[in-house]
Image 1 (cartoon, rainbow, N blue to C red):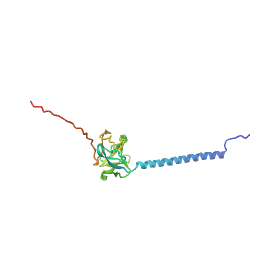
Image 2: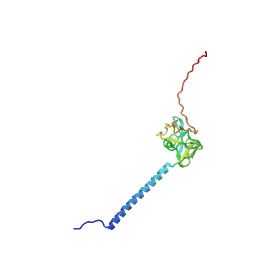
Image 3: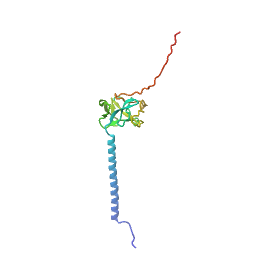
Image 4: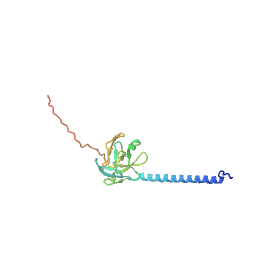
Length: 182
């Protein structure tokens, strides 16, 4: 009776080489996939921003290419953003890879950019850095209007590039009485 022993040395070397080759191929495919996905994500997020005009309950206001309301921050000064770190997680800066595009009703001459602390270009309108509000889930929502957060108020931006002040339509009636002097 013949006894079956361990594989021969040459057979083990070939098996080991084959396993290393397969692992190397899989790792290479994984790296290529990762690089391709990163390139796609980078190109998707690094596009030229478009700013348009939309009618809302606040009147005509600026919106992003997705139709989301664009806000200005009253704390911003000299065209520079004062919204960083956790502020920028709630009030997302409108960034662009190049020159922003003026959509319908928007004056191209009022569009510009400012460099953020992280080096990205934030879109400005009439020298106001522009932001979207994370709680505006659908196009046309204006839930960030007149919100006081991160040290100042936030306002939707008009076609003129100024803050839209949501003025209450209710009226207050006052009465006065005249009291004669004694």
